[in-house]
Image (cartoon, rainbow, N blue to C red; front, side, top):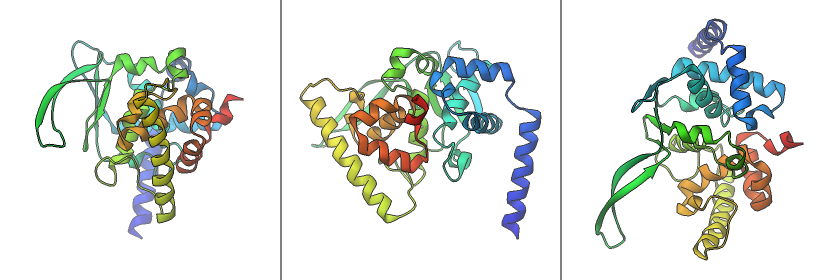
Length: 265
């Protein structure tokens, strides 16, 4: 009884947001023009994506660093891309419920890191970040890199920092980052581990041998990066991922309940 009441209350609240704070038509069309991989989706997907992005904007808090000034267009661009992975996932936006803040930086951020090697020796050094998702938030994004997702050459490479970082958010939902999201059953978890491990081994070997790879070499960092990098490619350049790693494409197709390669034809 209580669950039904809560579900009905949430539905009424969401409808109020959609009625009062819908993304304006021209701003939505501007976003689709800026990011062609969104525009090629079917009408029903675009209608659902617009609603999800509207609700996303009502739940999240945007801030900026440096002298970057936040605009509605910037917030909508992030929201629309962030909602693509959860468009057909059971749970929808609730899968992003563990954080609120999104911080936009003008460009990449240099941070100092400390780590221990296999011998236990502690090292330190600088790392350049285009984005970072932290458990409990915030999600940090370079606005320069967000915009790159609309550039034809980067789209062909499957690059999308927003999708990448929000895949990390999905990965963290079951504790830590290990390259596997929460999955419904043991059979799918075993298949995920098998397919991803074999594809990662292939990609890592090619990178180690200094062979040219279509997939970003950064994916060879480990399973925790292979998942978001392949997910970027799945949504942005599905034909490239399908040609390079057809089993990974099929796995992501099953998980996300989406088949982006259909939208290319």
